[in-house]
Image (cartoon, rainbow, N blue to C red; front, side, top):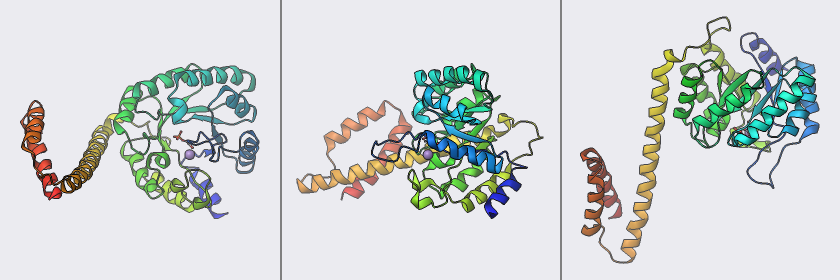
Length: 317
Ligand code: PEP
Ligand code: MN
């Protein structure tokens, strides 16, 4: 298969791990929940046939036991599990117990918690480091927002551990995956976790974010061209500091525009209500009440609010 050959060529430059979620933490119970334990045999087959290390997601001590017994090389802890320190500690204890008996776990990836909480992510890294297994962070954003400031905090606090980007879950959009791969190089991240499906539109989970094997090749090429060789020094986050800060500020700008657009939408609905009830767009008492409130925030805030309000009135006419 051409794709398999191209991937195995790239492997000499990029360390490649095959990921597949056997147990899927889905939002709704009526959706596909993963195949469960029988699918661990599929991962064993991938490992035997292609000689690549394999990874799966664990959310309970039972998952850890089954995965380690099946010889899974890497485990990852998903964003929902990462929101619970008790669950992460229980997984850590199970890794300690079973690894001694079974052996060869090469690494644990910990995703950021779904809620934007850098401290909890750092706490989870520390919880898992107790196992003695190498721990790596995966930045997957919060929902479909990048939350760069959270990742930046963790990168600065723990420059000694690798951080990967998960462009699939961060964007929830296949078209954005290659675009976000550029961030891996820009921010000096150490790799990426990407979801791939042979027939993306038929995927049973997150179909919109799946890329095809060909799409994976393009995404890997972006990364390969932009990544240093494995013999180079580990990335120094300070070289990339300005890029991190720009990622943070670009995201804040995006949120600002989204908030203004949401505000305009409410304002238009207020306009419709006023029309239906024969109320004039500008109500002096209401105007004064808002200005008094915003004045406390200073002149700059008032100037911005006045521009927004003027546009709101224009839209209500
Ligand atoms: C996954 O990696 O398939 C997954 C469910 O990710 P997350 O925990 O980031 O949502
Ligand atoms: Mn997924």
